[in-house]
Length: 147
Image (cartoon, rainbow, N blue to C red; front, side, top):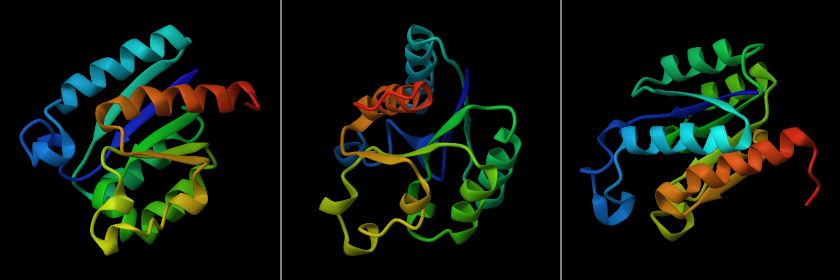
């Protein structure tokens, strides 16, 4: 099964951007860990990142028919983008929403996710460890695991 791990704005700066919130792990480190963990699950993981909303929408559209599911860290677009919400719905794939930080322990504007209602689940607050958790959860969903 092919899985897309898609990262949004500012995640290219991981490791140096506010490490007290986002940690010291870089995006290339996270992508390598996702690919390695995916292999243990029998998944072929592809990774992409963009700071541009439209490019993220394009990645979701391209995933349609090519991928079995998506792990999406939409960053700040989580709280603002109706376009991403609509693209998730349009691609008709299971999507796991992911955040490095616990958004509910942060500023009030981060407490609302526009995309969560169209995702199969949300993983947040576990830092870079959240990515393999999200892949495992998506894999279980795709296999029909009920627990």
